Image (cartoon, rainbow, N blue to C red; front, side, top):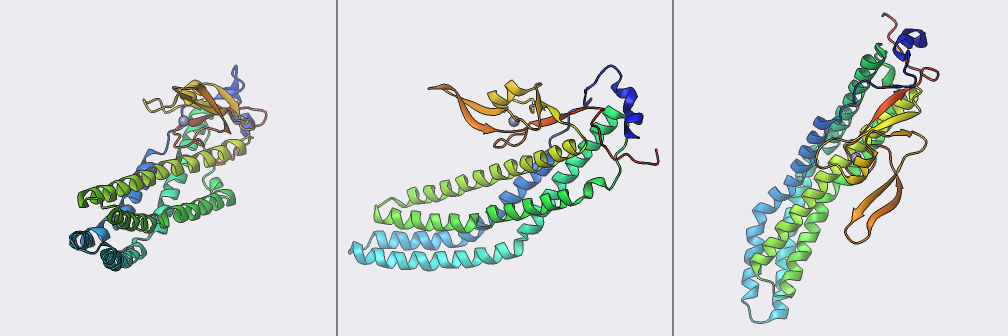
Length: 300
Ligand SMILES: [Zn+2]
């Protein structure tokens, strides 16, 4: 039935490339980054109230006489104060509802992928997808796994960072580091962690989008796609070189990068669009009328 409905579209162009480029789920990515920042801010907020006391203890002990006893005392004072931070942080984390936020982002990504897929099918084949088809088991399972994995990855970041900060303070004391240097090091630790969390958020949205898109296209009988980069200044050389080329879902291209020293370096990793680290490329489906299998809306 679907073959008959779409046959005119394939006249003179078989296989048939999608008439539109699926859009990358920007708003889901932004939302996940917002969540990551807000979650990390719990650490900053908990730390803010206690950092003056920690620094005061540090200052006091730096001006003492016996270094060894000072170190013991400082250790104790810093540990006590850090313990308070950790407890406060734990409460804030429990009240944050990380799982619900991550799940919301996952659903946003899924909805965006489906919306784009419907648009591609409508614009290219002139048919509408059956509404509830993509609520199948695969998609529910993929989403659940993605949410679990991401909650696991993000959950412990603030507590780990706090542990690193405590170590920075104690090491700083042992090495006689000036107080403002320690404060700088703490700030740097926070900044690094935050950037990592924001990058993780981007990477994970593109990974989920890639996974869903691939399944949608393969389910529809598309064995090939056309690589499309995000057409902005951030596209890496490798992905720009793949832009516009056709690949098979069975045989993704190998990734490479350029270094000043060795030139082009092959990584051995093979990726579809969106699977490489923080990749915002998308796969434009290529339809084949002989293998096409799409559940159409029957009332049309
Ligand atoms: Zn890319």
